[in-house]
Length: 299
Ligand code: SF4
Ligand code: SF4
Image 1 (cartoon, rainbow, N blue to C red):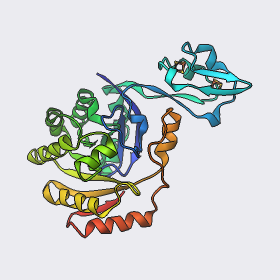
Image 2: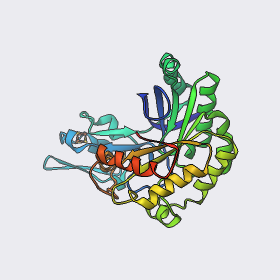
Image 3: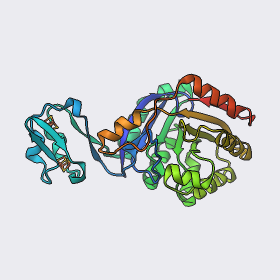
Image 4: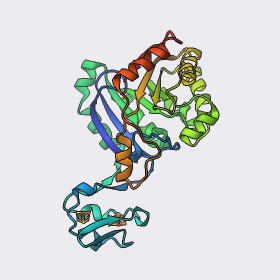
């Protein structure tokens, strides 16, 4: 079986225990205004363009049938809305200014890459983490990856926004050692405003994970002037307190890298702020810690 991924990151230490290999699957049902990984939004391969690398040679214009690329007076422009993702320009561009983002890979290929670091997993208690995007946007592919990893005795973690069917959760849960489960907003209207979707299914799936005795770490992106407020801190703590299978809360401070990635993909930023300072993230950790006995970490 094949699926679409946009990265395999080896030697990760923030997405589950020990040293891990993160596999990033494409496609996401949410559209969070601060999205840290916008290359995971689209389920299909796409192009990304880095203008600072462009030398204005015009090679892309020779192969782009819908005429998305133009070079006039040595100045190159790209109209993303014309792109049909044929990828010909990525093959013709000599400077790497246009690149492919996302590719189809088989379960076997990915697991072969993951297995290269088996000795590190054994020493550190690490393993494979599926991330994205939302890994369960490609549910059958995610399931096969998880099954293949477990068949090789590898610890598995699944980072999920929770926006998927109960059926998908039930299917993958037996093959997931740890769920890294996002909690982004407190209150239905706030969740819709920040992510474009209802929170109902996400909260129901969290209850389902408790019924299934799945181990969960709550992952909370904290975004300046968006959800860094006491109502949300209490909301995070109350949710963690409610579910006995949540053993830890992770604070994920906002960083601004997502916006430079958005621009390369032809997407305008939906939100802009400076990367959160470490000192501010520590204050938030303490503020949440006042409302819960569960461990709170900044990652
Ligand atoms: S990938 Fe898009 S921009 Fe590039 S040649 Fe094909 S249609 Fe044109
Ligand atoms: S082929 Fe690459 S370097 Fe040349 S004009 Fe097109 S984007 Fe720029």
